[in-house]
Length: 65
Image (cartoon, rainbow, N blue to C red; front, top):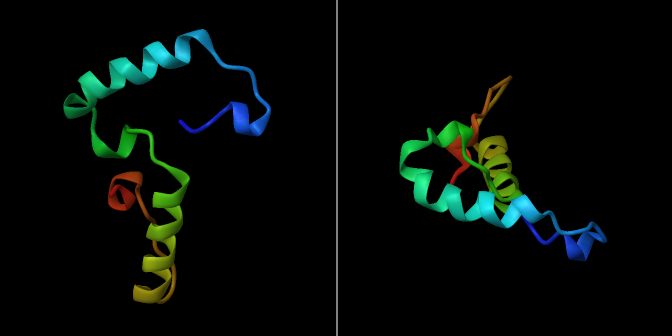
């Protein structure tokens, strides 16, 4: 996920195919195994810090928008 060119990384041929396939297969993939955008991770962490004392494990599915 993300803009590889902005990071100076070469495009991957299979990347576009994988992203398109994941759009179709997304309903079958558990939320904790789906890709997540960095901005969604940041929002989830900020929200968790405000709501939690002590230690807490955040799963990817809990941070999905």
